[in-house]
Length: 360
Ligand SMILES: *Cc1c(COP(=O)(O)O)cnc(C)c1O
Image (cartoon, rainbow, N blue to C red; front, side, top):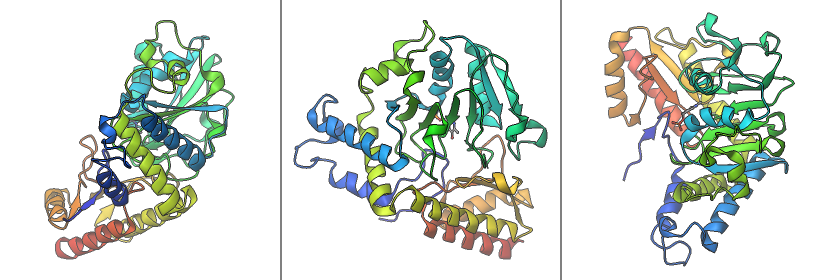
């Protein structure tokens, strides 16, 4: 068996030790004689799995006691709707920061449901940087401020946490668990699982408890955060296997990696290696302002676009998968999520150097 290096933006690489553990436990979960996939979500065995996953996540991110952790489905995209539906019961206008494609999609959904106010945008720069805090202009009746911490497609990340007088709501789908996080700065944090948490099908929501119970009356119960909070995220059948695998990823982060600080050190090293190689060459380039370069998603283009397909074909032959950029931006993108090893990044950089020597 050869596991190749996977730079996919999502569903993304999972840690090999996690998959090995899942394989060991596949047919007989710890002597229960069943696969986790076959268990009732109401069984004591699954309740233990679910509870341990939440406890470990709370420890990893030091989530304060006045925050609830919800395990939902529907992806981050469903949260684009859940955010206005759950936060506008007391009136007010949704406020948004626009830094590219994912924040733009969240804005579009808010507009569809309730209308929105654009508090700041980096559109004028071509989304190569983020609005500074002093450029954020909230509407007088702002209900919350939403932003996307890491624009997965643009490869753009905030280098600061916005400081505003209304609840801060953040899409952290592609950066959660990659660096330390001060949860207390936020009202709501959400993330689809398939980047840094586990397999697709699970979505995490971390919400401050005073923000629960403010849903618009028309909110379907399956989109209502409070219904999840009141029912231990088991209002209906949750994505049990994805929840279990997320729990294994949290254990891996704690036990094998040594926590989020240790993970961040590795992630910074990986990103420095790849950006360093890009910056040292005239053959590859990345357009993002250095302070806003994403640690997780590194888009880059070749000086000669005619070589794109050759690059991708040769990369694949060298065991480096999923380097094609998003269809909306073209070029290449290497996603360096937690499960992507330093060895994988070293192999990519060596390949890029070799490709440049042969084609540059
Ligand atoms: C992947 C991604 C999404 C969409 O996630 P789905 O789970 O497919 O809905 C939203 N926001 C960001 C920042 C993402 O990276």
